[in-house]
Amino acid sequence: MGLLQSINSPQDLKKIPSSQIPALAKEVREFLIDKVSKTGGHLGPNLGVVELTIAIHRVFDSPKDSIVWDTGHQSYVHKMFTGRLDQFSELRKKDGISGYPARSESDHDIVENSHASTALSWADGIARAHEQTGELKDRHVVAVVGDGSLTGGMSWEALNNIASQIHRPLVIIVNDNGRSYSPTIGGLSTHLAALRTNDMYEKVLDWGKETLLKSPIGRPVFEALHGMKKGIKDVLAPQGLFEDLGLKYLGPVDGHDEDLIENALQVAKRFNGPVMVHVITEKGKGYTPAIEDEAEKFHATGVINPSTGKPINSGVTTWTSVFSDELVAIGKERNDIVAVTAAMLGPTGLDKFAQQFPDRIYDVGIAEQHATTSAAGMAFGGLHPVVAVYATFLNRAFDQLLLDVALHNAGVTFVLDRAGITGDDGASHNGIWDLSILQVVPNLMLSAPRDSATLRELLRESVKVNDRPTVLRFPKGSIVPPIPAIERIEGVDVLVKQGEEDILLISIGAMAHVAVDVAQRLSDQGIGVTVVDPRWIKPLPKYLAKLAANHRLIAVVEDNSRSGGTATGISQFLRDKNIYTPQRDFGIPEMFLQHASRAQVMSEIGLTAQDISREIIEAIARLDNAMSEKIKKN
Ligand SMILES: Cc1ncc(C[n+]2csc(CCOP(=O)(O)OP(=O)(O)O)c2C)c(N)n1
Image 1 (cartoon, protein in one colour):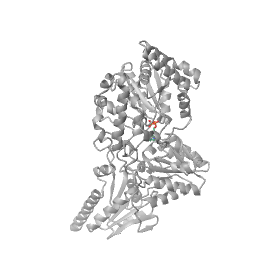
Image 2 (cartoon, rainbow, N blue to C red):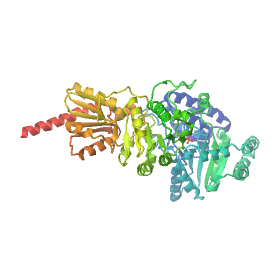
Image 3 (tube, protein in one colour):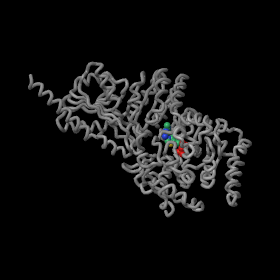
């Protein structure tokens, strides 16, 4: 690892002779495979951007120049060249480096948001700021956006703005590997493919590289040729969408030929306006198991055996796989069920549905807003769409859910995977806001299954509702062992009933196993406890009010922000019924959670059975004291 170890900053990288770049790229790939196979992470995307990242840091001057990575999952190589090489053993671990750019780690990192399609807006804003402060000529702004992230609506809103300011320099690098997780879909990807597969154009590039770069005057001539490409391109491929928008288009450039990319970026850097450099890369480049993985090219992986690419912990049943199988079963019974994904067919478990019903699956690209409103249209047309997204990405589509789906009483089922604390992907990947934002949506029905049986059951109940939206949320990872109810009363599952009616523990979804553990600890202390799972948490079952009135203290346990979540909904529901039983809310404090394992985060914020039972015991002791004081006074 000689070359790589010698690089602590972009300045060091600039000193490496061009002839040694292929050897450096090889070292980077070996390093990535070695480290990411042990920690898990976005291996495929990073293997694809090795030469691109090298070229960016050799041509531009970060952090004076701003480099904005869209989504940020492909920033590992950037981290390696900006002083964090020795921290990769702790990638995505508590107190280790994040899997995304992080301002706390480096001045070279700008955008921490792991939600896609924001880079162009960020870059536009930074360039506007440079213009205001008079730094536009000295400080370049570079946005790196994947062809997948380019399908998101925000990218197009930004392009519309960027293209209208032809005097404002801004370099947009489209990292086109033809894929999001799976192949990118839609008209844009067809357009990129048309640009990409222009043989004659490639030949021009090859000729440029082979002949011109070898001669002493070759480089300037070659760069001029790049500048001329528009003309060539227009002749060969008249569908110049980006040029029609007003952007200078450069490319396509072979994204694994560092020399060529450097050249294109030099031209782009000197161009005095917005310019798009179209770079063609291969996801998983240099790693056979990734190349052979037709489904996702190792987009994101867990811990794997580096030589085979096989997962170390395989074969567990996940919440996702239970949903996946049940939806296929439902699909066989009902032709009106269709499924919608925003570029996440495999991760949401819709791949099985797609295989079984290829005509009833819609991959809309990274377009959660469009997915939601389009689903409203499908419901209007007589279908029952099931929109499967990660809980955190539903944030994007709140307005569409509120006003296109709920206002129109559309029978759409949203399935929110990765709800609650997801842990190692850091702040923006946690699904801890859905129960709060959904509380305010009129007509909406919301449920949270606690195990596989309730997941299947609630999914079936959800898709039966055709006159309003239903939402089902469950967490990441392997499913918990079954937690059977002792009885179901008026829709409420009673999970534990021990001793007097002291504590009513209302457990939301997958927190049931924690609630049952808390109950055991309380009853060990002689405190009576009833644990219930309301199953439907919006609207709340009326029977909950009856139970609340009969207990001395209510405790709500949920895997969501404490602000505005289910606990807030429950206390309002009870007050409206004139029930004033004291209530304690256990959930996630209103904060952004740093990356760590789920268990570490839970323990840090006090969402463990031990913490919760201790607080309940203290609360009931205080109530008892207050009561005995009152008795004494009388
Ligand atoms: C709003 C949003 N939806 C979904 C995702 C999940 N996601 C992460 S990366 C990715 C694919 C990105 O594709 P692309 O931009 O082409 O980058 P590549 O991984 O191919 O380099 C998706 C869908 C996300 N990060 N943000």
